[in-house]
Image 1 (cartoon, rainbow, N blue to C red):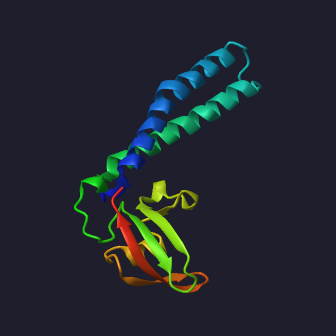
Image 2 (image 1 turned 90 degrees about the vertical axis):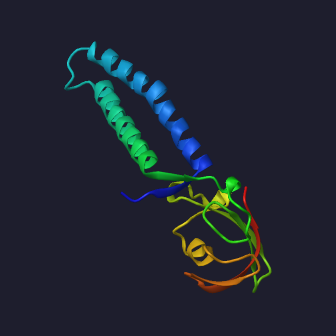
Length: 158
């Protein structure tokens, strides 16, 4: 099975969600099902059906998280040598050569990506163009709006 790269923070967030689901949400829905059963006829009991649906969602999410964690390759970029090279987990500062706009992105696993938080997936076009390049390199990124040239102005191991 292929290992999927994940940052230390990404793993921590998944483990916290898993713990919340197992220790809080699962017992809550089990007690809701038990309470709904006490009300009698299950065929017409909306609370029972809603609780069973919620239970299915929770169990599915627990399986999904456990599967992701079992295939995850946790990469702690803070323990890697700072070479100025763009690798998974680093935070990259880019200068758009046309507009002089600067942007910062951390290259993270697919499940961790959040463009509003400045986190881009390692499989995104920008990240694929950046991986393996060095600080100071000019990179051409193909975007839906056309090609954009960026200069890598900084690589940080945060």
